[in-house]
Image 1: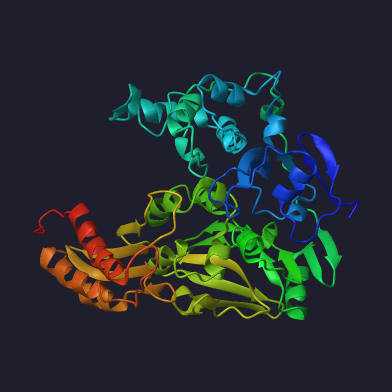
Image 2: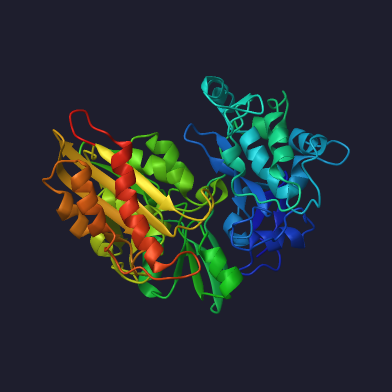
Length: 490
């Protein structure tokens, strides 16, 4: 284990005494960096946030905020991490820390280090000042400022959406964020952005009872899967961490795949857009740059930036959760999943990929290589998520629409649903009820009554079965109201 190490706050730190399932949070606290706190152990509070050096498309580095409670410590082998202690000291605080103190943005202080790290990630974001124009053009004002979510300095408050505070209140924290200037000349973390981020390091840890392997190549990963089909695949580890922390699961072998180049492709062709399965949702959003409007509506509603910075598109499909938010959208887009094994590749329609509750058509020796979205896209697309909170919450119901209209007539309709069955599903009966009919109130009301009967919704602590059914029909009515067509009766 003495060859496994991480650069933490500019200092190389060997990992001693860690297992395959030790979290980065526990390891950091074990070496005395106790600014990281465990609040929820499932990535919902952000008290454990740290900054991770991640590669930028132009060859530089981004400081990306992530939840340390969900990341295996050994997965950071060869990487660079900055904790709240690495931002500044009591004698010389970082500007983020100084502004939080001046604004009264800390009370009990438990959540403050996590807020400081998430805030620093946005502080160092390239292009932040470009947000000034967006704020200046906004029509609404809040407390004299333009735009409730962007400060005059371009700071995007959504960067803090994964951090919860239970005593200070968010107004002082917002004031601190909006008071930030730019990194000063000579700021070491700002200068670090101009150099490449660390590459992936092939890693092996543990014995036959509990092992962690980061393969050096895709071929090695596929050979491991073929020989040990009970191995657990780990990419963004946002589910893996919850299983370890809250469910006490200990896989005999964990295979880390998120840095394999073959799983990080991004290609825009004439017939499809291909998204590498190991791209994080934040990376997918950045690289798409608005090319798929339906996914653009989804991304801000998917958990929080801390989660999206790690969670992968392949992992969200692979877990086969009936409430995974990407699944309904990709179903509506008629996406296909590319599976790869040591024997070769095969392609599966996403509608056939989910075979039961948290089960898929993926064989134990396969992994998801990419997701293909066919082109052209539907002209009318929308994503509706019903949850208790608008952001950083789990869906009660998710509905994705992709509808093609030809002179006001529905030429085709694809509707993906989440939260109303044991798997994400297509609303086939509703699609048929819409096809060939005029996109008007009568058609939509008829189809909405069909949509309300789709799936087999159940009652749980998030919503009743009746509420879920009602929300299905309401989503279609809402879509119609928001898309009036010239010459077509509303």
